[in-house]
Image 1: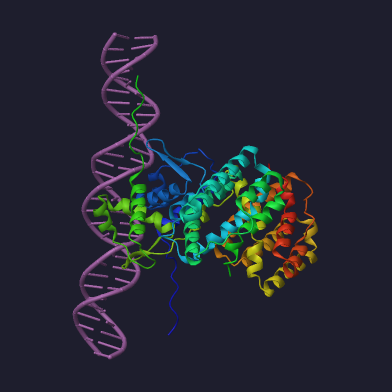
Image 2 (image 1 turned 60 degrees about the vertical axis):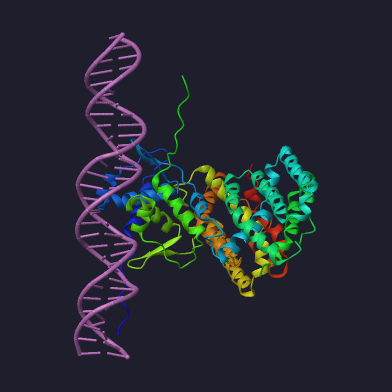
Length: 232
Length: 232
DNA sequence: TATTTAAATTATGTCCTACATATAAAATTA
DNA sequence: TAATTTTATATGTAGGACATAATTTAAATA
């Protein structure tokens, strides 16, 4: 018997319409603030029901491509590349592989970020980092409580992203946080004694203050060694 | 006169339902493959119309959180954190600031990626890279045609991501590509003569073959110098 | 006339009902 | 038992109706 006939298209109408609208926006060079045709007009022109158009627009709205006001209609808004990720970045939803990838991504980002930090760091930033480190050093709980230690770890590294001066990068990290947190807790469970790299947070601050981007990069790599050594 | 009364919430029903469903999935520890309640049942339980539920599910479907088969109903699918980004990663849709951020992200990734490369590189990978470089060196068009040069540039760097062994990272880069391409063309226009770092692709391959992750990192940083020097 | 108030307009937001379609499962037939 | 047809069911699509909010226009009032 011959092989199954090819299914022409099993793409839902909603997806098709979504693509067509996106194409329409690109082709016509729609700019932020421009207003779109109304839902009924779109539906008529596309030859589909208003329901389909609405579902498509709903997706585009979620991605931040369009916004809608009650009587004004819909208009273009600069899309937010992260708004989609935001909703699903959750250890309870992601699979093991995805989480592993994301964890690795963190390591890549923090080592690679050095250059941006040295281009954009301000003295006040370094001072604030120092404050975090001091607070960590003087907190007695830090020796006994894993959660406390994790909290400082995250606070410190989060601040680095903020210093990068790249808002997208910063937001990215803040939504990757739950995954980091989860993975680090897993690590802590498997290895009873939390391994630490030979480079401390304090060392990193010092490098940031009076070192070079090159030194900071290597120190950060060193600081993250325990995580890297888990990879295969 | 007193200040305006606070608006309780102007979040659309669709968004609320989307959140509630996501919460529902998390709370009940839904796992990949589990089947969801039907649309009508969800609508009844949530006290909203089926339309609203459908719009919400449509968004979740786009994010890869759920999939739907005709008679089977809907079931959980491991969410794809990148599927949202994919659709809107387009220079024609993004703003200047977002593109700048994404371009910086590329620099960060490629410098930070070194460690992964050395953990996962195979000899065949290095050979393939070498082949790309050789092809580039022997292509006469490379001296005259900007597009050709760009194509090789992208082919080379794209392969590095593939070598990282991190599928998420690799896909990420492939969808960031249009932005890279756009930005690099902009750079080429502004600076008539395309600046190049002192480290060539060939040097990078050599480092990859017989050097260390540390050396590769610094060489990559050097290779990207012309891009970094544009930052502020 | 100028200002305030009210009504009509208009697009999105929500709800409802009906039917199409695909397909897993049950019933039927060979 | 195995192949086939039927049936049941959940998603997919359509179209109409009304709600809601915000803008414009018209009316009313000072």
